[in-house]
Image 1 (cartoon, rainbow, N blue to C red):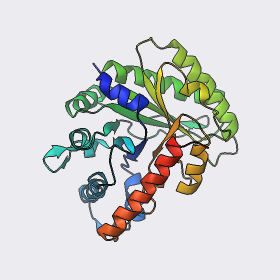
Image 2 (image 1 turned 90 degrees about the vertical axis):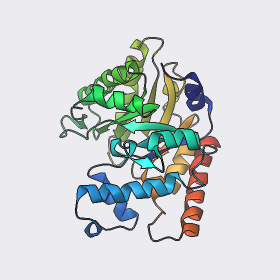
Image 3 (image 1 turned 120 degrees about the horizontal axis):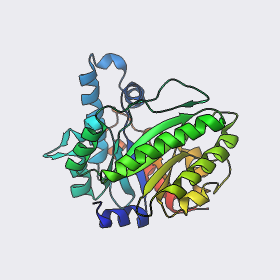
Image 4 (image 1 turned 180 degrees about the vertical axis):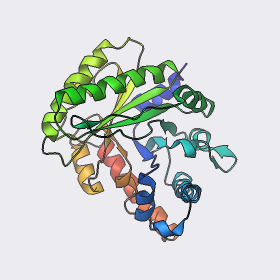
Length: 298
């Protein structure tokens, strides 16, 4: 049973979701942006040790609080690591009152018909059980859309919804993430198709089911208004998708009811080499900018 107080916090709280779930192939890029080149580490384990230190520096910062942040998406390896005496999920909620969410997808399949579906998720039930044991609030699962393909986008939505049902049945709130390539010349057409199929599938869900939806910032402001107002949708989140933070914030501020779930845009000015004072100053500025775009529209 999902804690109603946590659901209320996510539904009605002011703030945004921090995406700290870089994994696999995206981790070296995140570390390089943080000022740590690949030749600094030799093994995957060393790489994940370093990225956990980066995430720990962010999460434990006095700037990283529930005043501005509703939730944080973390990687499975992060969930199983500790911050101090607590596992990361417990630390986020018990110490920060920030809802932890877990990335559960295992990456993207090869592109077919203009989309990349999620790869199979082995041991899904085991992962969801462990998520509950670590007091995780919800999950996140990403697909990728590069063309306005009716058949391809429908396949993405169908796969996402089926997984969302399993996640919700396990006592967690699923976050559907059908990302659309911001550089695609067919982005606007793809958004129309995606919204159509999402609304169709949301209307079929049982009355007690709740999901969150994470989408690329739309070409037309307030384009996802119907999703935001849908009774089965807890929150609609925006991913930065490669936009610089200033541009992502500007676009986000035009979309009422949508809040940020930024990764690169959140971390873009943070570096390992910064002093604690410089790091805290940069993080404070970034958090306040993204919070403002999420909460203070127009």
